Image (cartoon, rainbow, N blue to C red; front, side, top):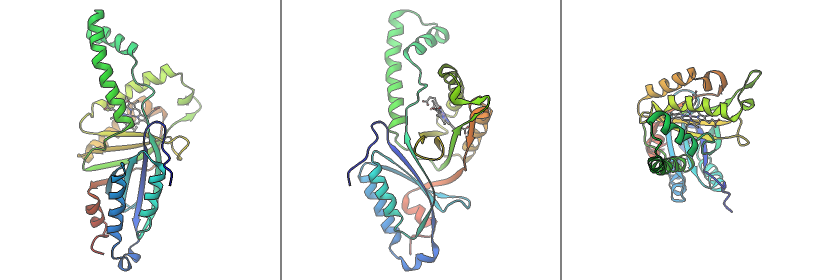
Length: 261
Ligand code: 76R
């Protein structure tokens, strides 16, 4: 099948799956088929993170990230040949932020925070800064998925109600508000890795939030702290939350009873 690739960014396909235990005994090689489907997808330039889910919403989930919608659609169908039921899903694309600082922002920040106004020194700092920003943008659009013990996923939208309409705010105001949001987020650098993917026009919510951490308490803390930030307190709506334990695909299948069948 012909590939279908977004002109910018990658696809992020979240799948939440329940094992159909009644069919397990009659499908002895189902785990191997799932593992083969994942390995082949990875060979084809996509990344997969798999996790065992706690709670009733699913047995396991996976996040597949990569360039090709057609390849991911085929992968989804290969997976569903196993004795499983797809109980939830989320389709989105990676995106760069529209609120990233510009050269002018950084020049103003250098002057106000670092006291640097000498043109030569400003230029030198700008060159290093542009390099950092470019790497950051690349990581948002073409992320390397991290290896952390726990993953949390939830969809969210920005509110559009009466005086609390995010989309009716002028760009400059949204930018100031997002800077506050980012300040809270940066305090979790190293403890929480976020992957924000955009789903407008693709799924029922506007963004998917995927958070990775070794410490599950860090996931709870960041979401709690964000709730007090105006961007979340006033303008955010949330869908259901899912929490999972990240492991190698074979380990996840073993945890949910599919290996050894
Ligand atoms: O590009 C950037 O990362 C710069 C700053 C930034 C943007 C633009 C940023 C930083 N986020 C951005 C965009 Mn975020 N983020 C969330 C949630 O539960 C909640 O209340 C909200 C869910 C978390 C936990 C989180 C964490 N962020 C967004 C957007 C798109 C909005 C838009 O475009 O209008 C959403 C929906 C969203 C939601 N954010 C950070 C974090 C963290 C940890 C950071 C700091 C990252 C870092 O500096 O490494």
